[in-house]
Image 1 (cartoon, helix red, strand yellow):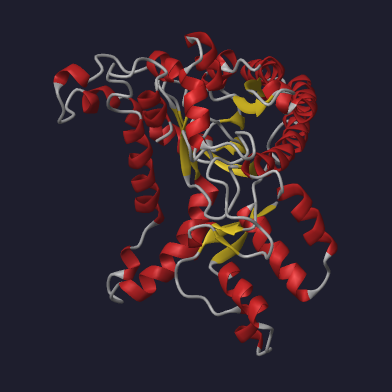
Image 2: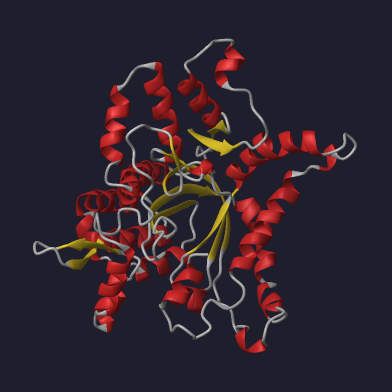
Amino acid sequence: MMRTLVACLALLPALAGAQGIRLPPEITRLNQMAARFAPVDIRVDVGSLPEGERRALAHLIRAARMTDALFMRQMWAGNAPMLLRLMEDDTPLGRARLEYFLINRGPWSRLDDNAIFIPGAPAKPEAGNFYPAGATRAEVESWLAGLPEAERAAATGFFTTIRRDAAGRFLAVPYSLDYQGELAEMAAELRAAAAATGKATLQAFLESRAEAFLSNDYYASDVAWMKLDAAVEPTIGLYEVYEDGWFNYKAAFEAFIAVRDDEATAKLERFGGELQWLEDRLPIDPAYRRKQLGGLAPMRVVNVVFSAGDGNHDVQTAAFNLPNDERIVAEMGSKRMMLKNYQQAKFDRTLVPISSVALAAGDQPHVDFEAFFSHILMHEVMHGLGPTNTGRHGAGGAGSKWHGAA
C-alpha cells in the first residue's frame, strides 16, 4: 500500500478550522495549502503474482526509492540538507513545513507559481542543479556555441550535467559519473529483480537498464522497455526535462513500479489499430504526416504500486507517453501508460466533488469513470501522432528536443 496525494481543486476546510483549534498563522497557511491535496491510500492486489515476481517488486521498490533523493538533488543542491533539518524539527510548525516540503519535493509550492514557503530557501532555481552554481544562461549558451559538434551533442544531451573543472572551466559530466554512487546501488537492485523474475522480457529490460545506469547509454534499455511484456511493469530512469528551465535539455529521475491490468489493457488494443488512420487524416500539410507510425506503440493499463522522483510530487499524473528518444519514437512508436488506480483516485476525490457543485442534480448520475478514463486515453494517444521533427533543426536539435519533451 502506498499513500499518495491527489490535487483536490474543490474547496476543502483548513485542517485547523475543521478541528476547532486556533493555530499560529504560518501553520494555518501551510495546512490550508496542504489541504488542497487529498491523501489517498493506493492499494494493489499482488497476491496473484508468482513468488518470484513479488520478490522482484521488492527490489524494484528499493531502487525506485533512490530516485527521490536524486530528483531533489537535481532540483536544488540544498534540498537534502533542508530536508534533514526539517526532519529534526518536531514542533507543530516543523511538522507542517515537512509535510508540505514532501508534497512538493522542495521548499517551493508548485501550485502557487513556486512560491517559497520555508524561510531561508532561495527562489526555485530556473536551471535546477544541472548547471554550475553562479553561472548565467548566457555564459552556458556561449560555451555551448563554441564546442565542436560531437562535444556539443554530449553537453546538450539528456544525460549530462554541466560542471566546472579545477580551473573553473565548464565541462559536461555524464550522469553515470555525477550520480555514480546511487546509480550503482540502483543497478544492483535491478539486477537482483531480474534474477528473481521468470519473465524473459522483464529480465531483459532490468539487465539493460542496470547497464545503462553505469554506461550512460539508454537506447538499448528503452528498446527493451518498449518490448516489455510482463505482469510487472517498471518505469524507472530518466525521462522528462521540465526541471531544466533554461533549455529543457536535462532529464530528471523518476519511477513508477506498477502491475499490469490485463483485462483493461486488452480493451485498448483496438485503439492501436486506428492510429495510422488518424495520422493519415491529420489537418496538416501531407508532407508532415508520417507514412508509417512506429510499429510497436504498445498501450498498457497499470495499477501503480509505488512511484517516486519526478513521478511523485504535488499533482499526480494520470498517464504518460514515453520514451522521449526520437529514434525510438520513429522506429517503434511510443508507449502509452494509463495509471488506472491513480485515475480512479482523481475521479473519486476531485472530479466527483467538483461535479456535485458544477452540475445540476439530474446530470450528476452521468458522471462516469469510463468516460473520464477514455478522455485521458485519447489525450495520450494524440501524443503519438503528428510530426516530432520537421527537419528545420535537424535530429536532436533544439527544436526537436522541445517537441520531445511536450
